[in-house]
Image 1 (cartoon, one colour):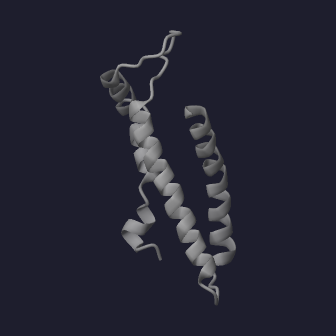
Image 2 (cartoon, helix red, strand yellow; image 1 turned 135 degrees about the horizontal axis):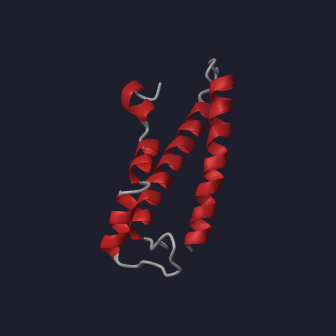
Length: 105
């Protein structure tokens, strides 16, 4: 199940920059129809939601320490490892800063 989840996140990580590039290059110039902007809003919120769920999954998923071949499954160790590793970059990358400071405009 975790492998399928990681693959879904990877697909989103590949699609998001492509959609952002399309949005900034062609769609931000103003469209008479707001349906594309509504679809992009749904896409952006879905991606953000997926990343937030991924952060929660990282707090409960075991890990293999460097130089070891066993999976650590103790929850306090998993939390400590994630907080001291990828938590801050994941959190900074997940927060929708543009929507917080510019109202999504």
